[in-house]
Amino acid sequence: MDSTVVVAAMGFAATLLGTWLTARSQQQRDREGRILDARVRIYGECADSLYEFARATYNRVKARLKSPDDDREELRQEAYRCNARARSAIGQASILTGSESVGEQLAAARNAIGEMHEASDRADLSRRQENVFQRLNQALGIARADLMTQPDRARARGRAARD
Image (cartoon, rainbow, N blue to C red; front, side, top):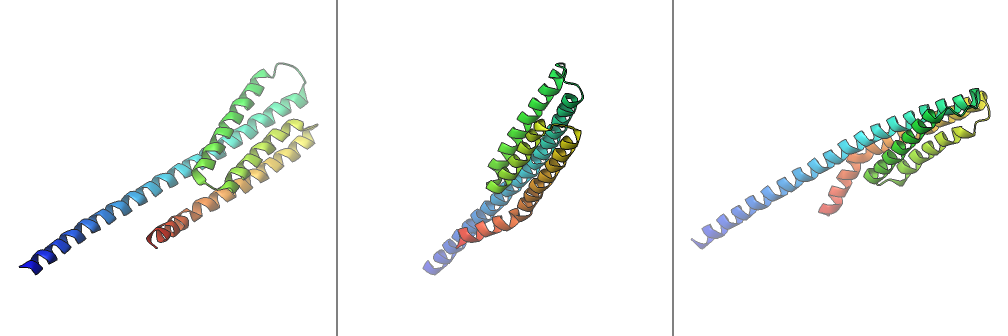
């Protein structure tokens, strides 16, 4: 009789433990999936905002080179708005990734966009714009690599937690 109670208690405990471990594992995978979705979304928003900032800055500088009139306030305001959105998206991406290199590369691309203001003529502006696109491609390549390594890092964290 005593052994039956012990075996039943062990079975009950194993069932509870198995249920708890399964639920915990599902919650962890769900959380990692939501984080991955958020990272994909914010990388997309970051890329969009950086390209919009580059477009607005290019238009602003092109207008300045074409005619140095003071009626370019609308272009200046658009560039400022785009810069603010880009900074916000870069900050969010930095928080979500935890990788310093991704944030640094995105910030370097944003800084390169800002350097277009220093263009002295159309040829210089074109060179600076090409540099911007190269930097953006580098930054987005690092972001893509970060997204691809995400499942590997999650598995490594899971193994480390079990060990």
